[in-house]
Length: 281
Image 1 (cartoon, rainbow, N blue to C red):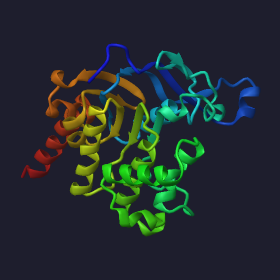
Image 2: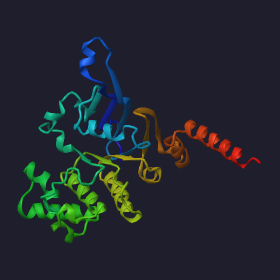
Image 3: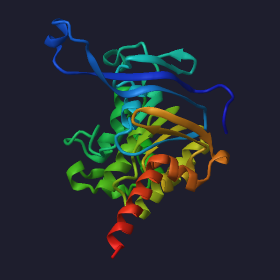
Image 4: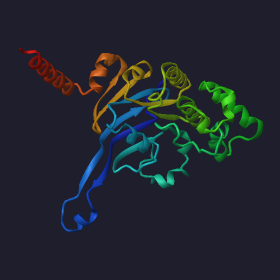
């Protein structure tokens, strides 16, 4: 189920990092910047899954952290539920009313998990901080989201170092959805998982979409993105290559676009020439 009004509107988003030493700038040298994200725009509506895709290092994770307000944008607009949130400094966003409505699961499954917390406490932590539930109701909610993410109940008493990468990823997802966010950002949640474990995450994305949750699914794997995405935002070196609805692009076309398109064709042609030369008598 989607809505005509976007839940999140990203417009002209940019993130620049200064390069070189600041003291050189004071001597008259022009400052130079690394454009980690350069003018990216897209929208996502309620109950929609947007695949934010591209090769490793193309800026996907930076965009995720900008949307989750863990980083401050250099320029551009971030409107969530009609309100501009990009101008709220990241250090203050934890107190903003939208904070609990936007949850992110990090690429590294251990990020955001306190090594001193059991899986149960890690999942319960955001609920405790928001003072939403306690006692029996808290335990019931933690066990419910553990079931939703395929996390066995017996693992809830274990600490992060006692869990596999796939199990930690499920704890991270359970922790994020415990507060019932409106927008869930999943940063490469299947990258370190086997086929069966990745299937659990992909099925959850479909379930979240049916419940009206907007999901930004960040991945460099088109075989994972295509089955669950409604739309695809393709990035290359921090720039937007384009946005396509699922009916407008095939899986093979998505693979080609993510792989660089013309650059891949040029490389293939070059390699064929090298092989022909090697085979010549």
